[in-house]
Image (cartoon, rainbow, N blue to C red):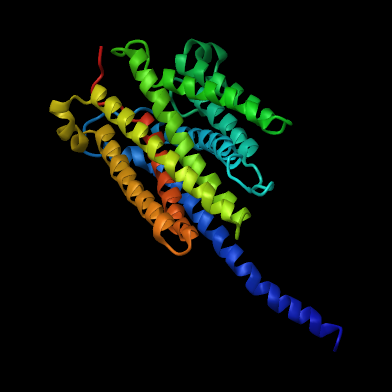
Length: 336
């Protein structure tokens, strides 16, 4: 009896201990499924009733582009927050396990998938025979996708090295490739558009990935004053990032939808509808950020700001997915 009872007690105590982890895993799985459904179904929903022509394979392209954007956010956010953490007095030496190499691996897969779409003329690839190398290298998007895949692969190797900070260079190459891809040579002032996208994408990746890594670091530093200091430091930088994202986003939108037509196009075009949903969600994220900042300043326990910050991360994840959907939709007005 004495040999059996401790075993039963251990089983009883371990059961409840697993429940929070199980609930968390189920919640994460549900969020992943939801995040996958938005790009897969989003283009067709946005195009409904607009008369816009859907690009072949728009759902697959939107999903791959969403994964690529997310893969860019995670390592850049880690580098950004780790740099902030080194300036925090009394910061513990230990931090959360890096996700950079896994994110970069996902980026390689997403970029190769986009290259495959480019090789087949943006059609749903149904066999390797259709994805010829000639079609890949003749396509500007295909060449840029291959560059992104190589850059993510190098970033993954750098993340495993003794100097993980050098992965900033291949990640910068990914951002540059995306900025060039978003504005082809036939567009009016493509260099200006690429510069706006470069700043917009960099700041967005630092904001989204940085907040995710801050929350992961706070869990690791639980019970220390350094965690509060890190959250406050990130909040101050996030204000600047949000201002830059807003300014570049408005300028980019006005380049594609002039002031005289923007209100109409926000409701009658697929691109405009998705952009409107993204803008409204970013506004909600800004409210959550202000709520977290207020708690950080006034609450007896500043770490209660983590609750709205977690909701902010989830909403930002949807923003990233909507950004992927936008890249797969036809631009309402082409400037030539």
